[in-house]
Length: 370
Ligand SMILES: Cc1cc2nc3c(=O)[nH]c(=O)nc-3n(C[C@H](O)[C@H](O)[C@H](O)COP(=O)(O)OP(=O)(O)OC[C@H]3O[C@@H](n4cnc5c(N)ncnc54)[C@H](O)[C@@H]3O)c2cc1C
Image (cartoon, rainbow, N blue to C red; front, side, top):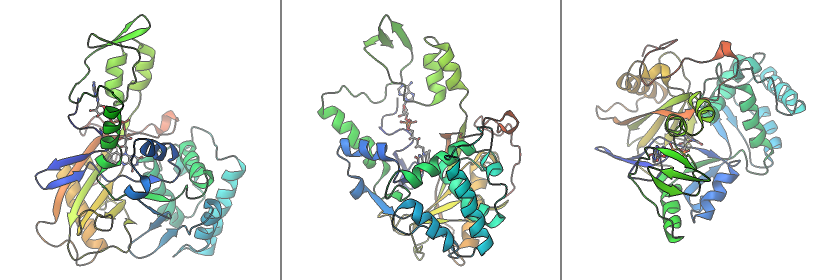
């Protein structure tokens, strides 16, 4: 249906220039994604900046994994965490040992907040919450502890480099969609852009898309669209797809030619007036020097107040996090809100089911005021 390949992970053209449809990160444990890139001729080494997992703040506090085997690196990072008391470090190591002994599994009804209830507030704020939002795009009080532990397990046990951060140094479209499109064409595939499939029907062992026959079908679209298409052929499957909920992400692109971050990605302290959890220095990622992407994950409560209000709150947050920066009147370059960015990795507990995001402010449980 779109004229450009890539879906949510693509380059978009705006009046202010070309931007990615939101900053993306990968981790070393994304082995299938990296293999897919290689198979279509996109070299991850050339297109992604690999660095040890670092969740540090502008003041230098936070966690920085050294290189080496991920499990050992994690222990060394916790022991060396800046700004943490010994009791904080020991509490996290104790909790992590407990998770390890239980095979990184837990009651599916637990939220990440419940799983980590005994950890000190500093560890929650500096590590658990940013990690949860980065990996699951879901706030700790809603996020499934089981999914969180699974991500931790994969990051720590999928081999050397599995916890590394991989940051795109090329436009998103160059990372996979464009090479994949060329690869498919070269292999003789009939690739059609701009065709919105209207109907899916079963025809014996074969399928019909808008009346045209195909041997097989893979639905690789949003759950909403998949529900619409699958409902006539498999209502039970369609119901399951319809039950998936999404979390929005807002990306605010700000400019300041005089600012350079100490590293490509920094964590930010969030609060009632501070929506963004991360900032990326696009200059350090080989893109736009002096341009910074501020990320608001799990952005539903902010979007309820409108995208412009969210952008203003991020601007104020940026000014206070980086004193003297982002003061020019044309600082805000571009605002992007993707309402169905990720499906919600939420706990299965009915009591904790988050409010449904309907694309406008209908159920803001705790709207925040910028
Ligand atoms: C701002 C943002 C930040 C993100 N950050 C990260 C991150 O850091 N790490 C990470 O792993 N993931 C991240 N994600 C999620 C990631 O982008 C998505 O999981 C991924 O792009 C999903 O790919 P997909 O191919 O499954 O679906 P999509 O990218 O949604 O592609 C679906 C495609 O199907 C097409 N389509 C839909 N309906 C029809 C129809 N009826 N007929 C024909 N075509 C149709 C659409 O046009 C689209 O091209 C982020 C997403 C956003 C928006």
